[in-house]
Image (cartoon, rainbow, N blue to C red; front, side):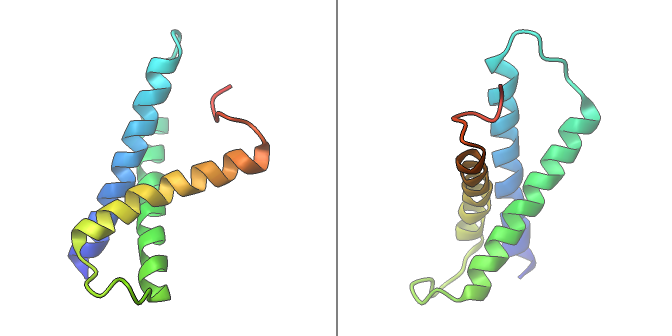
Length: 97
């Protein structure tokens, strides 16, 4: 179970890093704020973990073997899913305006 949670956290962290890099290169005058960076990476990892645990606890029948690789993918996609839901709610195509 530890490997599954660690992989889920890693997937969320990777999603956070991708989002951060996307934000950094989208604008010219972006300052690096270490505290913000670390908090967002930690939050992304937690979101990935929660998304994976939620999927695992629902108990989808097609997920016979819940591997760390699958947990990593779900952890990555969980953050992406929440970001897109948020964009739908605020009715904007981008979080960075």
